[in-house]
Image: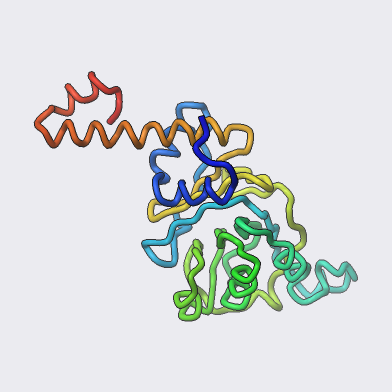
Length: 229
């Protein structure tokens, strides 16, 4: 049975109670075994926890030859990034992939706009910049690291709210994004209630197992008794 009545309540519960390892384990048991973003996508600060729905953004490298085509997605500064950013909704995560690692795909001004829109944060398969400014902001940012080189003359956002890929993982708009110090995973919408409910139950069970072990129960006996380890 759900213990939340809205996305806001759900994401708050996830941030306070769940962690990526247990959610990932549950999805493994359901056959969803490629749900983590690449392992080099890390939080800007170790205590950052991210929970929200994916607002997917497709980024692409460009060249002078692309600019001759006349497509505004390629010729306009940053492509349609401003349009994508302004379309962020409350509790949504700006999730970006598709480009090389030659430039940053997010920075302080983008995060300022996202925060003003009550967005949940950023999870990008690429670099961020303006690190000092981002560290002073109360918004979760997950990326492959920091690199100041700008996307302005190197990359463009060419689409948003479309399926995007990160390795073996496909991310659809509206999927739940959940990140902490151990990584970022994606919960498909079609299984989100089952996954989150089972993860919550497992966390409660793990607390029981931990208490039993502290009281002297062996790990073998604990696993035999509770089926959790």
